[in-house]
Length: 162
Image (tube, rainbow, N blue to C red; front, side, top):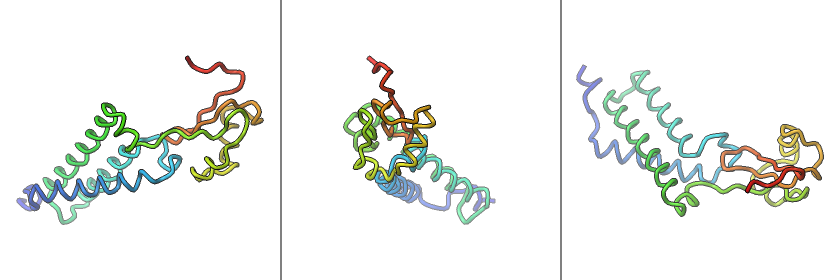
């Protein structure tokens, strides 16, 4: 019973391991194209995946105590919270931690270099435009790949937001 609920690993080691994994994965996710991450911020994806993996270890009863696993989850949640807080309060950090929106179409013209950089095909762009009810590029003032992976579209007949 003590092995299941007692602390088997020193706290400093748990904090260090969880922090290194979280920060390492945050760096990896920073270089992944936006459309690969879906509708979640990269740090939220990290938290969900890592916590899910740790929770699975707890459910399966693998070689770590429940207290160790709960402490690891707490560290990951804390890092996620700190990243969100830093992104909110520090615009410079936000520019480093998050990607920026990418202009895909400007005044009816597809920006091929931006499509290539985001690993987005013409077919995928056309499908997204059809999802917005657009079948002709000339109807598009701007199409933007947003940070969350969605493609937003402003039609030529729409007035820009103030």
